[in-house]
Length: 94
Image 1 (spheres, rainbow, N blue to C red):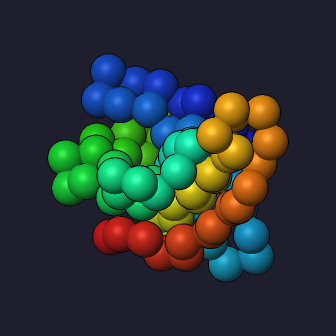
Image 2: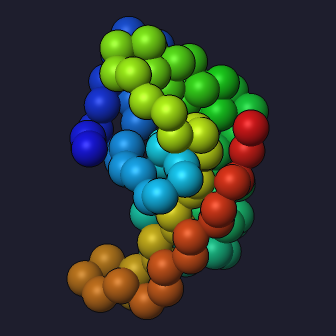
């Protein structure tokens, strides 16, 4: 549906849909979990920005689908050239 949707309030990396949900997805890329897991970088402040941005998208685009907020963590090898792990956190925040 959309990628890198931007408003003055923030950005949503991916907007997609399945049969029941309209997915607002934040993608976090990290080389390792040494300091924190990627999902931990989606703190409450970032969540509020995503929620406000999603509200604008919903205002502009009518849908009967239930909104859901997911996070996708992508970890690469230390050189950053190869994906090592991908985690999809469903309904990561509300």
